Image (spheres, rainbow, N blue to C red):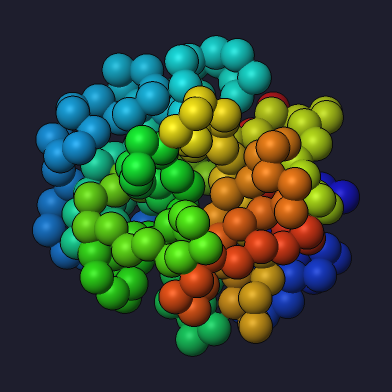
Amino acid sequence: MQGNYGHQQQGGYGGPPPPGGFMQGGPGGPPPRQGGPYGGPPQGGPPQGGPQGGPPGGRAGTGNRGFQWVSCSNGHIPPNAVQGGIERDGKPLFVARAMYKGGLHPGKAGPHIQKGGCAIGWGHDEINVSDYQVLVGDASQLRWVKQEGSLSIQGFVPVQAGHEETGEPLYVAKTLVEGSQQLGKCAPHIKKGMSYPYGHKERDTKEYQVLAYTN
């Protein structure tokens, strides 16, 4: 089943979705950083950034499609950031990624996230990081596609946000958790489906949605 963020009840995603579908981010914390561990241009993308976690083109799409990965730190969320989730108390969660242990891992970012502003899942733990990148662009060009089990890429182009240390691509995913919508990662090689950081642990779920382009 395919569904836009504003129609999640059809896919079992209750709770308060952002009005009008996706929401764009705003200021918060220190300004975006151009350096850090990403070394200037967004890691794994074209010179102007892009949703690809590997070279431009290929399975994750062609070019950057007008999206960028903006380097941030310590809770900053840049303008036009793509909101993909929401906490139980209504705090927004933005699509993010961070480098860790040789991989580039999709996760969540927000000013309220402690110990750095971004969280990813790795090795059964929730990892908090202070240097990360946030996806920026026109959220109306994105949609969510329902999945069950390991990711099956058929009839759509998912947003590749990163890669394992061994090179396997990782894609942006979300799932319903205790009245919230949490962000994480999915891939064909992740047999349990989606993994995500929540409650100081890395958790798994078979039912989730993957972020994809509208065309």
